[in-house]
Image (cartoon, rainbow, N blue to C red; front, side, top):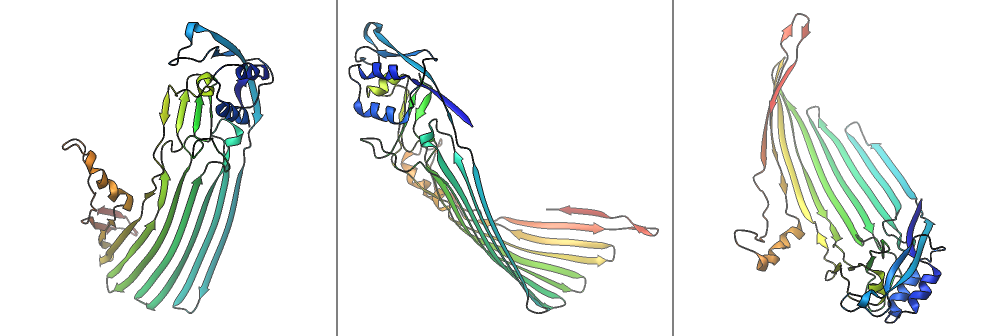
Length: 351
């Protein structure tokens, strides 16, 4: 796809270099990443003929720097790799084994930055393995056990090899009069990883008019992730002049103190029991009880560390607690009254 921006022409850069107070470091960054406009077809931007004082050019003594449009092609692609293995094995009439493995890699290129030098590939990787054992103990008792592991990784990096003299990471430099930022996508870097371990067991038992089923689903999540707003720093200038003279940004100067990974590690447990009780040939009563437990994520538990900032009665930082009474009884009724040779079915239920 085609993109573009507005930049100084060759004559404009010559005029900029002749101005007093221009920072060689900032000008070097500018000329390294900002392309030169081939023609002056977008007017001019203002530079002060002398060093501005307090963000003001004395006597409005401006130099008009010619600028023009720069068009370029932006890469646009996705790569998707999939691999699936299914294995089914019947050991005997009573025992069956099933295994699954899914592999998926998806890569696209992020063009959220304004300049192609800061475009970057954003990989998403997913893996899934599961094994299921089905066993029939008798005509009335069967069991299903499944173990599974899922891993998902999403990564949104910044390009490698970037450096800004005097800083430990490359920031975003916003130039309002030109209408673009020098730097990577403002929301990068960030990442999210989830490792999900799962054990599921379901048992079915039939006795007389009762068809019972009970079991549980247990999951253990290990999930580090990170997204810190403007982690690398975001410095916005109303005029390119202020940046090239290394003056203070006048719109925003934001920089977080390091990256703060969040850990979504938690355990989940979902047991259940249910019974389909066939009271009469045309009347079945469905009874059941579910329970749900979800541990507070490890990272959320740390919010109590901010208690020093609590305002009683308004905003208080405390350690959240799990809900341990999440029981859900179930009641249902399936009734089919006879009408001649046919049957009319009605189902009633509550949860």
